[in-house]
Image 1 (cartoon, rainbow, N blue to C red):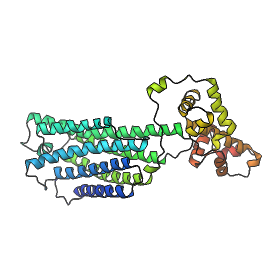
Image 2 (image 1 turned 90 degrees about the horizontal axis):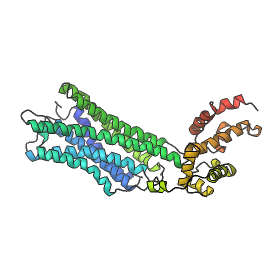
Image 3 (image 1 turned 90 degrees about the vertical axis):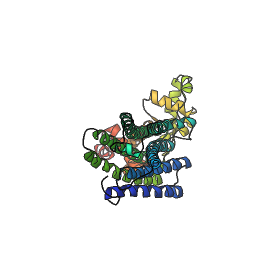
Image 4 (image 1 turned 45 degrees about the vertical axis):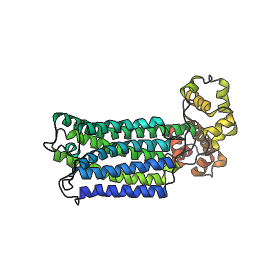
Length: 379
């Protein structure tokens, strides 16, 4: 950066820092999500704010550091903040999408990234002057070490952000194994936000790599864009944590490999019991039916029910139940006694609790909307 801290590009870093401090306070006061998720999100905000402060201090020519210790502390602080925000974002996503999540010893393995980078900083003496590639501050060895550190710092957040996005995708698939009616709005927005961070950090990585071939001024101009997007995404994530995070449905942990290995062979009787229970008792009419409630009616463990639906019916519980609901809706649309009912009445009577889900499934199984189906089959 080539202008005093009061230019607009530096102000966005100061605003990011200030907002992150406020968001941590608001998170403690307003959060409705479980404590561990709130702590992890607060840690993420702290690291993003610290990263903004370190970048402001590192690249601004008008904020000088005279002490060698201060220059080293700035390098260590920047590394810690970047690694921290990557790990905290990933663990936050995991904490709100996995049932009974708790930090375990193996989670501390994520800190290996931090130890590696801090080791390189200390052993190579990579203070803030060397991170900035100031003239006469490098030897051939420290130049290579600095390049390695920057590559690591730019690449690591991208990996963690996309890993978090993958966790959300898996979570959405698991929801369909356990619930017959669900709103994917919460997971959808979480996925968008996480992909936003992933793409933002990917942009930062691309700009960093371009900086190896284009002039510093051009790379710096592109890199400034990253600060603005970060500011917007941080605020959006906070809003999400207040509105949606505590509403996410829980899934059950998948069975361990040993449990899968000893699972009994699927019997025709079990398949028939699943089909007959659903049809005889019309359980699909229960809007909030989940696989555990259904399994209790069948008299089979929910994991075995899920396994049978996956393998024998070639679908998941969500799709399995909603196909029955569509068939019920079709029957009602063809029934003269239901001719005065609106499509909204029919979708609710057939077990759906969402118009969007009803229209999506009805069109998938019939190739047309419910209104078109009714017109083609006048009573």
